[in-house]
Length: 174
Image (cartoon, rainbow, N blue to C red; front, side, top):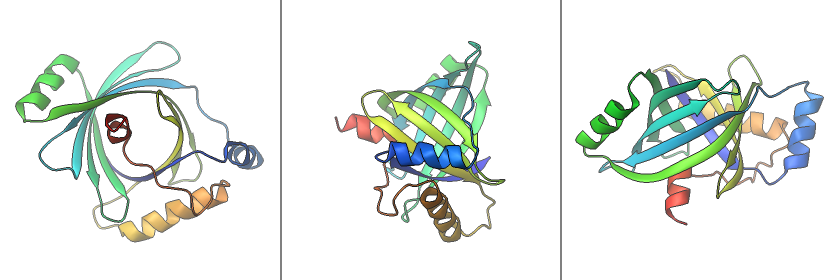
């Protein structure tokens, strides 16, 4: 699956929560996520080994490949993984080095047929809003980015809200 997304630090929480309520949107149950973020030779890509635990205690593992576009859009490719320890060995074997570990609580809600919103509480960083939409290989990323920016605006998030970088990089700079 290929996903384009934008992320902003949540500074206008009350406006945001009011906009969600007015739209009749409700978050799913919270999921706890632990990400091990790995960087290779290129700073334009990262690999993430993720462990997710849902509210029922069910655990899942996934591998996420991220590409950072020059216009601020992030492309993510994800797949489930059965053997987490083997995944870590493979990532190391490919020459990737661990950059950071990210612990967060995530709640999601589908806000349109094409856009998913995540509300993240990231340990040591704060609260963030992330909008994502599935994209095809021929989709115009600039148009998608504008569509995601419009969705943020409709949720009470200022057009001037600062785009947030990857959590792993933000934590590594602390």
